[in-house]
Length: 289
Image (tube, rainbow, N blue to C red; front, top):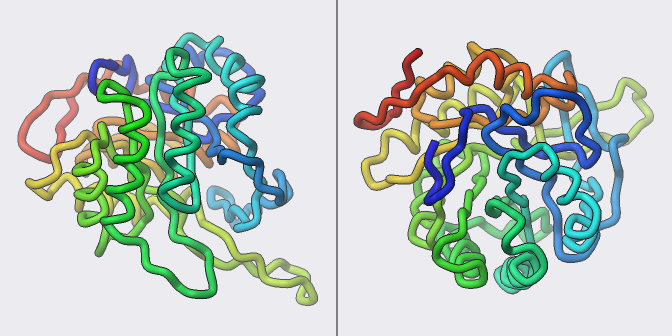
């Protein structure tokens, strides 16, 4: 997969990588995407905020903690870079000034050490019910692009909304994105077994997300206006799942929940799927052995 001047050696990438990534085989990956960070740390739950809904589906609580960009720069990024593959830093912010601020900080502190940035676009969790628009996606992408420069790799990760994702993707493309990722978490509610416990609001990842993510990838790959490569992300556990995303038009995949449930899964899939060679044809992309 070609991302600007960056060439990924493998279609398998690790998403939301553990800060303490241990084990062998990660050097085979196409890239490592960090956990999403914010400019300042956001208090909340750690791993206890991740609920296993069924064997391959997770619900990530809305009030999960996020680490600060400073901690990522000082402690986590050097560890992840030891695996010798490109590391892209995933960032989010509540508004355009926030995206601009964190991008400026990263460019100043580690501009030459990170392979690129993933811009995590999420629906605001507010009582006002504000709508996420293509205009916001365009301006957020443009703000990061202006801070990082014309050669930087920017992957914009979009919400799992098949009926709206084309418009949001066009906003990202107009703002200067290098690639798209479909998708991030699907809003859901988990009811604990304890009937006295409060419901847990959050986002679904894993198996339950995969059919929606596949549709989102298909929507993007079948829009002639969208010319950016696509990462498929959501419920990748097997080589067959990788193939499904590639058949729908993705050029690579991200493994997130699968790695959390089965440590080392992304490295194993990289070993299994690294032989796939992309053949660029009319959308969607076709891969061959």
